[in-house]
Image: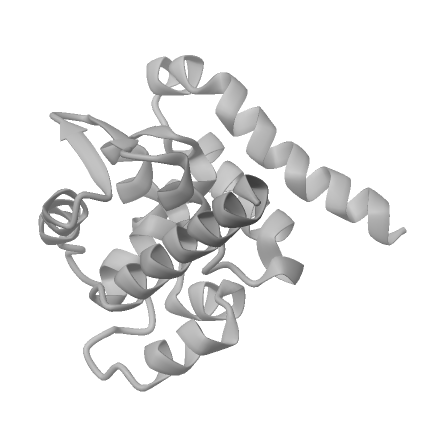
Length: 170
């Protein structure tokens, strides 16, 4: 009986988190998707680098259909985050205001693993490995040598996702 109640509570928490995330601004949701791939702890600069180097079309292709529908109907998003000054402070503030992440200067962390999981669920399951591989490629290309050294295991892990996906499809 306790196991059943525990499962119901867990499902309810997950449902509440997904609903909360779906109410966020579209740019905030896309940033959460990226952050969820970087781990429970992530650097703001890494999320910003990915957002500057990934096109809106790539983000649309990686999102689950319900999220994609709302993105497609958004007039305020350009075709690429690169073509304009991407305003991250509003999205980061929204992370914090909604109680999703704790932000300490450059370092961020999801307040709970269920929040990270709910953000990760925004990504289309068939696209997860390639999306994470794309993030790894962007970070490998754009991080300074010092930043890359500090994030080496995370970047290699992301790149391995794409490599294992390519191997599985062969």
